[in-house]
Length: 338
Image (cartoon, rainbow, N blue to C red; front, side, top):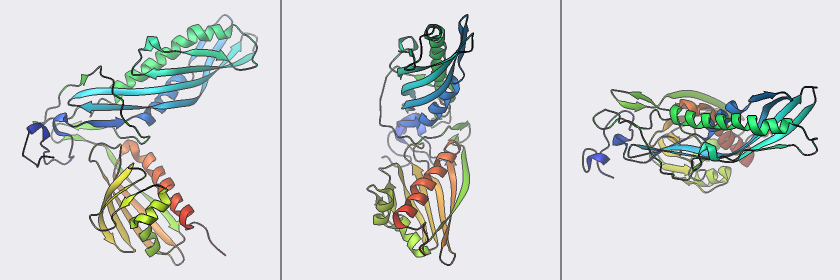
């Protein structure tokens, strides 16, 4: 990589507060799988059609298998999405008899136009035949197709902001949509929406929060749990790389989490820069772990700063599940022995 101020200007990294992707040259990616799941459910649930024979309504979306992301390469936006959608509809005849059926769309993808979607409508097994099925196949399928088209429109409008970043002269180029279909490796962990600033480039909206947990162990043992590679591999149940010294790097959960230890006060405090793999390139949160001896217990307070706002809930749940619960279950730090 070129040094600051040297080499091809397309690769120059300016000294700026957000350390952003100058000139839009590098490949950047935003995972929008979580947002897509919520948006698809929002658009599909409650869809309703009526006819002389009765009415039908989408009442559940029990299955959404797939992923979605937006990529920026040299100022061009590439949208990737691939979903298998399964929904449930309920029909009510004019006489009040209720019927249940299923809707399946196996090929909602960036490779298919809306008109090419396969929308399958059927009655549930053992349900008696009803003319409401035809109503749902004709009118209901039209509304489902329109809702899925609306999802794609929202995807391209709500998450375009911040993907085309200001160039070295501080001016943002206009998005250049591309027809290229690119499939890249994804994870389920999302990144965030950026908000532009004319003076310093794109800044990511961030938040701060704290978590508190009690472990039935000593501060020194809990401290070692976070900086010892063998112990990290034990509670994550995967291979990990952990250099437990100041300035040491770490990578765990199959590369989904990585960072660097900034400050280490044995048995008391750990400060690290920490990120999910799918956060915007080079964006890190600052995580501070404070441990206090409470007799037979150790109180751990986790202070998180600089977490992308849209990632707050997911980051909290990740720490609770992959750190707190996993450590207690692996080392027995959550059970009292009498």
